Length: 110
Length: 114
Image 1 (tube, rainbow over the protein chains, first blue to last red):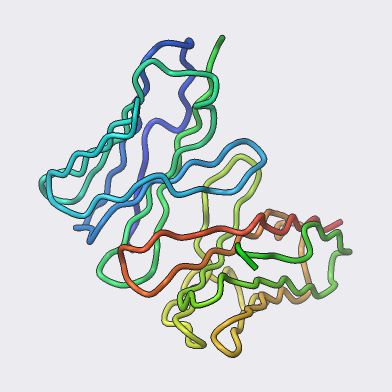
Image 2: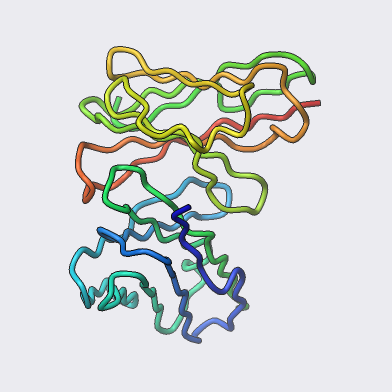
């Protein structure tokens, strides 16, 4: 079936260090979305990428969509304690079913 | 309401009982999704609706699980003869029609089967 994998599953970083999570699909995605789930909360939309090779930035967050539209990454520069949570990518494979990646849980060591 | 509303927020039930979980999506959102999240785990897709139709129900774990949506609005997820492995948070999300629209999640229903 169409699955979206994310690595790493967990990441512990010192505050101020950078963080990256990678999202991979075996088949081409129509688009990719990123969500953040704070501990005890529900996923909240961050951003969407649609075009091949697209790069978008939100303050310290940089999102990329691969040229083949099969992979994506989220990079956070100089992490802060407010970045704690689980980051999910989610994609569409040509229909409206929204498939979520396995998620990367980020913890920050102050 | 302004957001996706789920009820109940918490449900404790005895093994073997049936439960109904309700999702009230954002008005005008034609797509509605159900996911299951076990403690510390990812989002397991269960089913999605486009209007009242369910184009993909492939994620329903067994025939004890069913869902319906009426009037293109409220959806109910029913679990019959609950088992302990059904314990999880059940999340509902809705979004406007289209692949590029963002999904809005409810707060979830935490189901505990004892």
